[in-house]
Length: 362
Image (cartoon, rainbow, N blue to C red):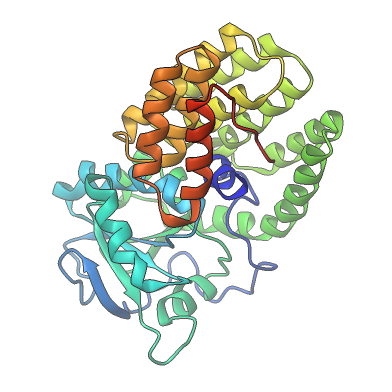
């Protein structure tokens, strides 16, 4: 279940981006002219040859194998739907793909959860892809998903995880009122902190795996302190996990509920909270009912098309004695799943059918 658990619980917490190595030196930053689009093929949507002054563009780098990318796609799609009539164009730029042949099928399966433009990287001259090199590597970005916002003047106005792109920022960029100079200073500071966050994230994961809850809590506080104020919600799910490990159930439920209420459209966050509630020992009926509600809300937001969310919902339902519903949702998860996680889901389905709770491998 390791692959499926990663798809379910990966978030925008520092270090949850698909880190490849230490942060490379950056030569592309906020305020610089956006590099040219170098696309091998448009998988979906009308091709964009170049940036024009009539539009603002989000160029988001992603891959089919990337769990956080999959989790953020519905959110990015909502941005596209909300702003496409206001001059926004969204391009899902596939990069670092292991098998580009599977991208069209992936996009087709996402259906109305991924309606924006999708492009493959040009690897005719660079084996790693021209877009990956001239955008990601040039900007010192070593993880996906990463979104670049290009303003009407063709300059990079914003870089970050798509889940942290706030409507207020996009509104200002679309209205040509975004303080790019101030954000450039903020971005430069954040870039300098990335290595520190990478080290702390590794330390946190080791503490969580060892179930050293005191060390995990202290490390998480360090991570939270280093994050921008508007991004600190990212640590809440990890803190819920720690509270559950400490058997502070009431506090964990309270935090899970307040976090979900604050960000009801963040289906990845809702699903992660529900997963922790259904996999921690000692969670009572109150906690399981909360898990079922959160997983149900995430599933509604994903329109029943994200296998990891359906799997979480099924687990909550089974633990609450709703076996028939659990079997039905696990079957839906299996039916919509990519090949690499089908075996895991099929095993879980068989367990539910036999009245057994599937084991969880951290």
